[in-house]
Image (tube, rainbow, N blue to C red):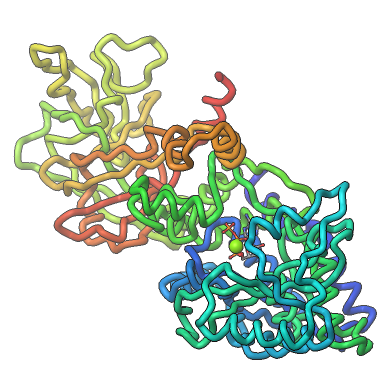
Length: 580
Ligand code: ATP
Ligand code: MG
């Protein structure tokens, strides 16, 4: 299949089940014909590729149906949240190319949620429980056995009210009391067994400071926030399926029986992104950062949006990938190769082709005069005629890849070996005449003679050779550091493997260390790139011909160029897997 047909197919592909639902709701005139979604990150870490899937859904669905999508920070847990994360999340969403209509915070609703909780206590639908977490948990029962009522369940309303105010006054210790909704300790949905809806947290909040000491739990904040804002479609991932009835119940309680059916938020769930050789979840990613297992949240091996950005992934490639894997109601493990083929496809269209030698050995063109130079035209991008060309300088001494010379080469080796001819990309055909070796056998220099009249357009330019290799002129090239990245994990499904190791009692950090691919980063400090790259800027994309796609690192300077490998030219991993 050509690239074009792939794109056409993805544009024509059928609606996913969420689009079908939204279009049906619109056709039926629900919510007054409005579509309003939200993306609700908790600001407790950087966004990862899984979030990109949710972002494309939340923003994409609103965009497609003339609606709006708000960004709402779910900031109900002050111990883990920080404005650093808020800023990073905003930067990443914008980089992906999406725009929120409003920036909201669950903490904007702390007063409304408090008032609602007070109402529930007054209506006998909530009570303060003075038991500790463990005791409460032990009374929950099991899916097949009902739970036990708390001894505080039927305490007088006024007592609960007084204690609830105390929970927020600062005079009580964390964990000493909680507010619970009074539902049904025998309910078959465990989440209905008098869920905790408020707890005491004394850590100052990144926005509201020390104003609050009692904080709503996720289930008591999310649906209500959706309702306050006028969200119509509350899209989230499958683990929230059992929470949906509670989501609906709290909204019913909030509106006290008012008829809302056509005008209320509805939660719909889709499958999480789970990629092989990739570990998501902010908790795990934070552990990698905190234990120095990566250089930071934007380490190019991280599955964070900022990690992919630094690695050289484009927003277009991420959106293309998300679009291709689609949305379903079933958990799946997607192949990393799909993501890599999306970035290859995108960079094939946009990356400038350049020459870089990442494992250099000298090639001396012995019949080329010393001091002479020639400039050859190098096409910037054969996929894009508008991209033009740039000049590359040829001279007597070149750098080539060590792998492009072999002393005792097999017949099918179409590169340099004594007596064989190859084309030097964009320049002459050369005949290899030998090499010089060090005492230990290391090749120190390779020798060749150029064949006159074999440049493009010259009389002998069509002379048959089986191979073309790249090169840079030793006197004109610029030194560079090249970072070759590979998968961070050895195991195909790190999420499940981590769970398994932890179940065996292994310390989580030890488990992460054991799963890490020891070859996930190789630094090559003595590489040479053509001088055209001397003034590259961070985030420029290149194809190092015959090697892969690279991107200039954010720490690169003209004095110390640094390039990150985004992806190799071909998928080498599926071959490894086939052999295994
Ligand atoms: P993590 O467990 O990685 O920290 P989270 O779900 O706690 O993720 P939130 O910030 O609470 O992260 O999530 C914001 C939104 O992103 C939620 O709607 C959540 O469902 C969605 N989301 C999180 N992880 C994924 C994923 N792997 N695939 C798709 N959507 C995801
Ligand atoms: Mg979370």
